[in-house]
Length: 155
Image (cartoon, rainbow, N blue to C red):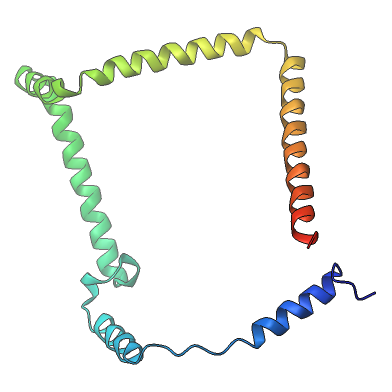
């Protein structure tokens, strides 16, 4: 059976058409530019390359330094929150972000509201809604597949 709708025949036809296409030439200076860029990247020192190319000792020292900076920062914040000067400085620094308090209050309210609604709805309704959504998804998927087959193979 060698009809136009036969997948094997269609595959052979597409393969033949693609193989008959002429080869495209790369731009004249592309190879030289690529080789020059590769040489430039290989000549970079290790600290200018990505973290994975750093020597193991340098990576360990860098991570240790970051952990040290983090520990110092946390201890300074802890000390600052225990003094009145530090507390007022933190209050002044966070004043422009006061709107975040309102956003947090609204999100907390919504979380409590959704939790209360979820606890009030019986599980069988949730299972039914989930099955309904899956059925709708499968319906859309099958209609799309049927439309694709109809439009693609009707020629």
